[in-house]
Amino acid sequence: MSSKIILPRVLQIGGGASSELGPIMIEMGLARPLIITDKIMVQLGYCDRIQESINKLNIFAEVFHDTVPEPTVSSIQNGVDKVKHGNYDCIIALGGGSPIDSAKAIAILGKYGGKMRNYKFPNIVDKPGLPIIAIPTTAGTGSEVTKVTVITDEKTGEKMMCMGMGFMPSVALVDYELSMSVPSRTTADTGIDAMTHAIEAYVSKKSSVYTDMQAISAMKLLGPNLRQVYQNPYDANAREKMMLGSTLAGIAFSNASVALVHGMSRPIGASYHVPHGLSNAMLLPTVTEYSIPGAPDRYADCARAIGAANYNDTSDVSINKLMDELVSLNRELQVPSLKEFGVDGNHFLTNLQTMAKQAISSGSPSNNPRVPDIEDIVGLYRKLW
Image 1 (cartoon, one colour):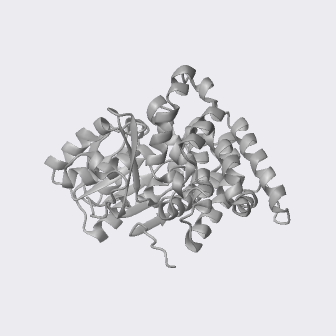
Image 2 (cartoon, rainbow, N blue to C red):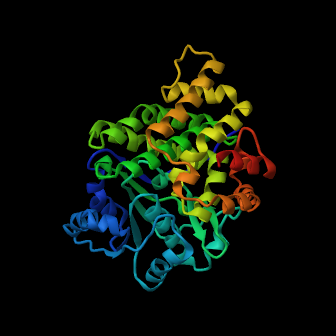
């Protein structure tokens, strides 16, 4: 059985990759970009740096810097309007997963119109929007190499997963030097997000030989370096490996799909504004324990790849070490419980059925090695609390 693999047209990786933006734009015949970013990128001077680099080649960009964490239908609307009424031939997406996800949605809505809900899964968006040049600044979401975006409908509280070739960036410039100033909390949350991508891609029912190789390689980079960049944020070697690991994990899950952790994570983020990477971290030990019976040998492989187990350990020993590692990692990276984060317990417990239905409707749980029903997911949410 063959597997369709979708990647950016250009993937530039390594220190200084972002400085290649101008020459790549010229090669592609692009000259009228809109930069989509957030206020932090502007404050840190990254946006100015990007503009200065392309100005030298007589390419001038306008900026939309009003993206927000966990983007919503309303947060992207001004960007959509800007594209509709502008004469742009491409979008430069600069920042973490939220600006890049926002840019993906804006590129499609700005070109074709309609409402974001029209594009959500199970609809598949394969028609191309404006070309996107993605420049990530965090090692986490892998959005620079995925055919997925997630936008929250604030009217219904649903995190809408939208996917298809139309959301894949044309270019990804993966420059670890842009991640050196990321705060420890963000480093931890995005790092566990990347690890979750790799693990879920590897155990997904849609995995392939190709995605397995990307996922295992990602885990080998992420596992030994996540604690290091959390404790020593200016360790350039560890930052470089985390950024590459995140990109490989993004390639893996974009082509193999995520599973139950992500399916359960999105409703928590939508209802309680828990950052996506953080809610994944909260869920990963609980969901992994539930899922292991569906693919014990695969989870044992994950334990060995992240460095929790030795290659001569049995599957049973490796699985036990994996669970110990996931719990230990959350403790060391100070991942809070839902209660510690500030989620209201009464509201959470009365919201379980709604969240479970949203999780199922996303499609991700059906990729899990152990496929849950709604009551299973309700039970896992209760256990998480």
